[in-house]
Length: 165
Length: 213
Ligand SMILES: Cc1cc2nc3c(=O)[nH]c(=O)nc-3n(C[C@H](O)[C@H](O)[C@H](O)COP(=O)(O)O)c2cc1C
Image (cartoon, rainbow over the protein chains, first blue to last red):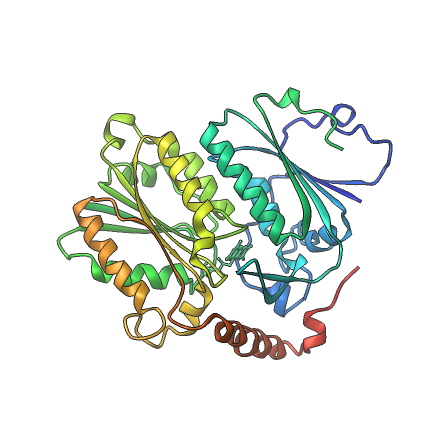
């Protein structure tokens, strides 16, 4: 399954989704997503599931089912937009509370065995320094989200983003 | 010196950021004019932004979320950008205090770059700051004064940071982990933090690792 997270105001399915396979789940903003309050309920109350019931409580499960995680986000200072960031923050039920050490650094153990390809499409007026930061951020997210491969693309204009799936 | 200190933790209460900031407040001289703001999951009003932009120094303190800045704090940074009148802002110095859950404070380095990129866009100076690892252990050991226990290096770094803030001088970026071995920290986090909390909710170890499909 493909999981596509985006912050576009207008989503043109024909332009963005070229694949004929009908297995893409799309996460978009409805203006009602609640920020993660770091309660760890998804680890110690309802393992694997967020306790905030606002329609974004199943992100851990969606991450578990996907093989390709595709993100389209406006770039702010080398980071995602607040909405996309929020969706990623709310995805920690995908992980276990336990720690492991990878390349000399601590990370979380994985609840699921799936491996993903993470592709991020950043758009907006992005400086070279911000592009560098964004590249580092996506690679770091890849390590924490069990990604085998990460790819980052930059666009000046939304209309240049095409066929991401 | 007018100092604005912003706690960007998204927890409703009991944040590790809050513990660090109360120490910083105590270390700053009483003659400073200090405003503390808690952002939480809300946004600031225009009135608050107008006060913050008049500060000589701004301290952004927040937890690391997804290797970067929590979404609500990020939203605040985007909104605040338009309040920084370039001329005045040129004199403002911004410091950051970032705590993260993993043991290594070094993992905050991308969030520091993001703050620096925000400073570039807002026309303010970046003064550096502290990246502190094992953040949840700050709350778990809070009965021990910060200058006595595993975070005494953090306390010393905060003392130095307070001096730099008062002089509006660059601090550089310092990454810290606690004075406590990583393997013991890990055992402690697994055994004394996660398991008892989960068993209070009648969950076994098997429940904690369950896969829902
Ligand atoms: C959604 C979410 C994402 C997090 N991401 C990271 C991370 O990428 N790296 C890390 O070291 N800690 C991460 N943490 C752990 C927090 O930084 C840590 O719990 C921190 O001490 C919370 O600080 P506070 O009490 O001031 O809110 C994350 C926590 C949450 C809830």
